[in-house]
Length: 298
Image (cartoon, rainbow, N blue to C red; front, side):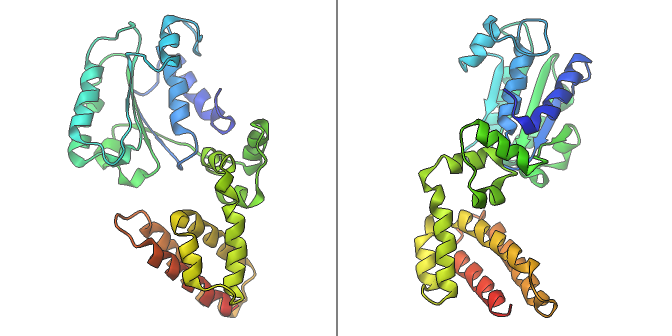
C-alpha cells in the first residue's frame, strides 16, 4: 500500500515506466520519516514482477521472493555510519551480473549522503554506463551533502507532505490518535510521528512543556531540566523551537531583534546536534538560556 502523500509520486514513476521513460538513476530526497524507503520497495517490486502489469501481482515467484525479502535482483546498501568504496563496488558488481529472474535489477542506497568521496566516485561509472533494465535509487535527507557529479547524473525527485490533515487522517486509519503537540512538530515526517505516537515515552513532550513552565517560574533550574532530558535532547530542542516560534508570533516590535537573535541561536544549536562528539548537556543549556533571555524581554 502506497502512503497517501506519496501516491502522486508513485503514479509518476509508474507512468514513466509504462512509457519507457523511467530514468535509470533517481535521487529521492525528503525529510527523514516521509517514507522514501517504503516507496522504493513498493516500486521495486513492481519493476521485478514477472507479470506484464503496472503494479506487482503479489503472486508470481518474483513477488514471493521479494515479499520474503530474498529477491536476488533487489540489492540494498543500508549504512550504519558511512558508505565505503567496498560497499559500492560489491553492490555494483551484483548489478553487472545477469538477472536471476530475467527481469530488472534494482539497487537502493539509503542515506546516500553517507557515501565517502571514493565510494561516490566508484558509483559514477555505473551511473554513466548502466546495464540494461538496471535501476538505482539513492535516498537522502541531506541533498546538499551529495557530490555534484552524482546529482548531475540522476533524476531528482523531492518527497514531502503537502497537507497536515492528510497525515492526521492516515494516523486515524492506523488506529492512532494524533497528539496535538506531536502533530505540530512532526506532521511533515509521518512515519517518525507514528513511531513516536506508538511509543509510551511519547508523552515525555507533555512533561517538557510542564517542566519548561517550571523553569520560567523559577521553580526548576536549567541544570535540573537539562539532566532530565539529556537522553532526548533532539526532541527537546525541536519542542523549544516550536515554543519559540509561537512566542515570536505575539512578540512586540521593540523586542523583535532580541527574539530574532535567539531564533538564530536555536537554529545553530540544532544543527550542531548532528556533529560528532558534541556536548549535548551544554547544547541544551545554551538553548534554554537563549529562550529565557528572549522570554524575559517579551
